[in-house]
Length: 480
Image (tube, rainbow, N blue to C red; front, side):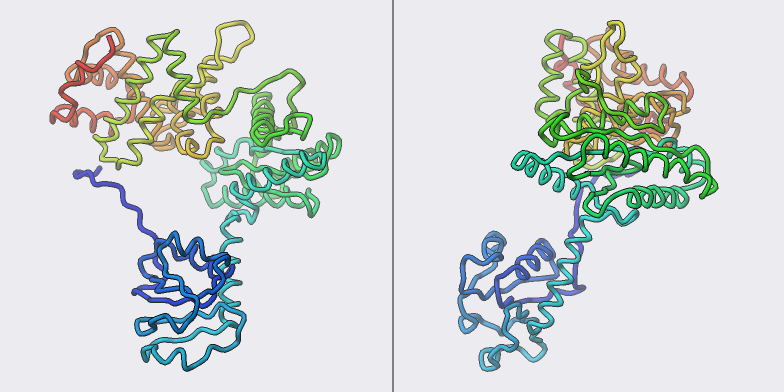
């Protein structure tokens, strides 16, 4: 635990160990990629870019970065340059124009420039790849899905989307270790690739989840591909000497199941969940009339909490207090400001899944609300990081919680924090107003429930309260 809380700092990796001053000749694609690569890097200073065509690709970025732009080399002071990078199509640069270079400077000609462009383009390509499996990553998935939807809308081209999740993968990781788990993920990725055509797009969505886009595929063809993948994964345990591995696959079709990326992902993802819920190792497509929970923008989610609060004052107060307490516990742990903001949002939204839970016959079980909440937020880029907090905030430290029965440090830190905040708030819900002393009494009661909360987090928060760090005016700010 950190004794002194320090602000979060993010350092941009350096390309060079010491500061290097560069002049770029040419403002085309290669110059643009170079500028994109070095932006924010303190080891590279671009003294200027020489380009007479103000419509070239790199010019607008150079202007945004504050890089001086010259229409000829003769107007540029070369005395401070370490490297003149020739990214134009000319093989040579007039030597008389470079006489101002200091003795240690070097001129990199266009052949090296083309090599640099190739390296940088490869770097851009690798940024879209998952290094473990060799499949595309989630960034490329959403880019490709958007393009496929646009093509489908314009030309009426059908396509299919598969979402898949490896069943029982966590137990393989826990029992055989992460190296074996990585081997299994690569094997699953291999089965996926071997089952596809060259035009199909396979991506690792994250963890043990994969997504596949099947251009021009209709229902029958998509089902054949999905079954081929399912059977291929089903055969891996025998080949790899493991047990219990299979895959659950959800299927959605354009335009039958939706004509937007959000609707297609929502239906394919929820279909995958239904396949897992029914025992896994199967392919499922939602039937007509079946609707999954909606995804949320953060504004929509917070608005829903507020709207529910108008009908359910306790629920609104509870979410607000869990949000506040989660941040205070985070302060006690010495977490940085970025993580504290994370905890505030996660605390406010930890019960968002209850929006889809009802006591009516046929509704989801109460214990599913944390999974549903995580599902509702997982496809929102700026909320994806809090999904583990939402999904696992009912897990107990002793492994007797839900939905997965995780234990100890298997439970994400944010989820352990929200578990404690949620338990404190429920113990104090009838004792308004309350402050540090009442929280300490609640912590004593939680401590007696052996194995419920993380003992280190609990003790850290107790010390934080005893040291007088809790806001003195908190009682006056509580809702009545």
